[in-house]
Length: 336
Image (cartoon, rainbow, N blue to C red; front, side, top):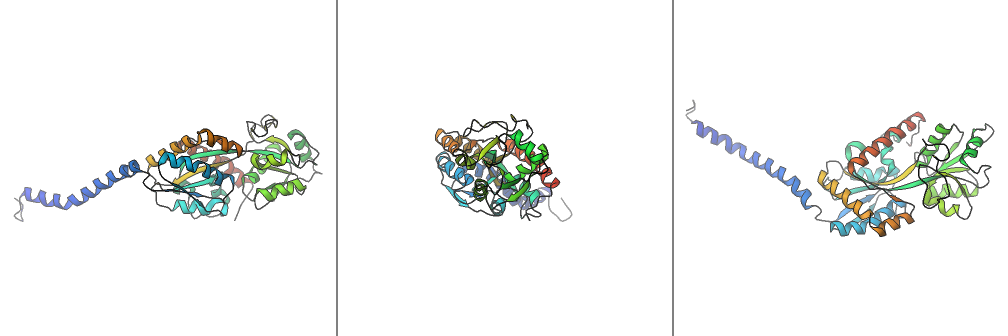
């Protein structure tokens, strides 16, 4: 018996009664997490696309959406939120509830924006969880037909000549085409002046018109201009030839194995989304993209299906950040 007259048994019961609600809350909370993941999805899923309708990233989302609906048993809603290099959509998803009902469809810019922008309203590494890469889009080094060079080696000799004045265009500051051009300048030791545009289409129009001399741009955007001879191609920017232009050699074949530039679409979730949901979404996306009709449609877009596990995608993003981050810092490239 204690000094206050209570027995040890009564003291134990008093403590137990006070702790019981806390223990029950912890038990219910622990049980709720796997239950939510197990029951997912129970309502429509939103894909927030960081680009306007009609572009390659938007089209990929719309191609896989019906297949995902079949696989997951819930409607897939496309929500386009373009602007600010993908940061508007990324911020929205970063701040969304991590419940598996909001995902981000973005580009490779997610891995480079932290270096390009002085400040972001979200942290790409802390606030977004990589789910999977969706598709790769090969890029190609193209030129105006009047440029006196027909191979990459001839172009390099021309661009090293101090009397030459060569402008290379891109879809804008900090875009993949811009960064690819800066990377090639550093690897090949050539002289080129960057001319940024507000999108790939106006840049291509000026290339066709001869107002700029070269670009590194997606195969899908360049192929329609290449066939009628409005532009010419030096090399595909990578290690594999593009199916849309199999006659064009790669930069690796042309003597620059260290040069590679690639666009890609990707899928992210808010951080803290249950790992089981992230893993299942990654798996279902991969299954959707392997369906013959989806793969065929992607090939028409000049895309190469590239789904993988969340961990594989995380490593890809880390490698991109290291490579492009150094280039951006070395060349003092800033968007704002």
